[in-house]
Image 1 (cartoon, rainbow, N blue to C red):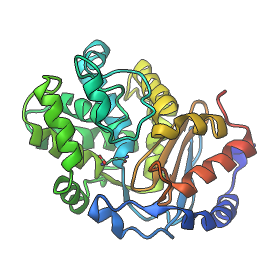
Image 2: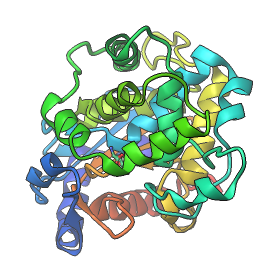
Image 3: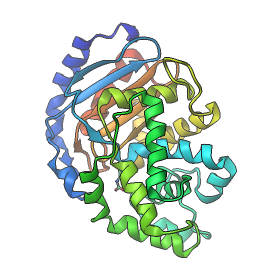
Image 4: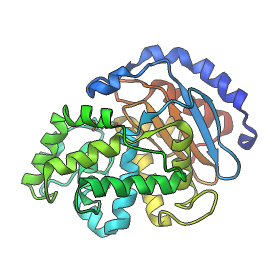
Length: 310
Ligand code: GLN
């Protein structure tokens, strides 16, 4: 069974899927991400019981990008409660690209459809408690340290600056939301928080452990301490199913069927109840912004061990 999975099996799967990397393209709209090497591939599985197994470039750090949206949502729910959060951001999949702006004009008030698209995630970042960007980002980092039991995890300032200086579309979304009173406070400060949360650097084992906390109903996998209330962890995993792969969430649910969230760095974090967390890294992306190798690998894993939740 899956708990008997060995490092050499993961290595052979990576070997089998690496040819797909050439079908994708590394993100370059954030200039620092263009420096990633499409041949760097890694996978890690963190079971709820047992040690993390990993293969490939597992030491390589990459930024969370949109995977951070699941984490910031959990923290915003803890800070503000469900009614407040979903008073400002919806629960429905959009079927649009993650950075799309046009739906905001179609609804009054301009409530973003869900927290996994950029408009919704920006509203969520705006809700995280703190007197300034530094404190808000610090709280997010502490939250990640708690989930991973690893205080070495930090923001990659180079990627954060690169995104902050080129985030014209996210700025537009924020100014639009500010105009319509959906976000409070300073736009540039919220963008600072958002770009830094997206730029938190992790490796696959650290990311798989975060996935495992969600899979463990919000509890730390070693001490069993509740870090995220169970109900909020469940909300996050549900969004991972309905919106985690942007406008490819439907086909991913059919082919893989595991709650998962991707980011434009090429990372994917998956969470499977009673099993654990899975993380894949492969920076070459398909046209929807999902890791080509990541999707292939998760498909193999799901089919091989019959992991679909459906
Ligand atoms: N930081 C990225 C952005 O806002 C995250 C997008 C993503 O990973 N899909 O564009």
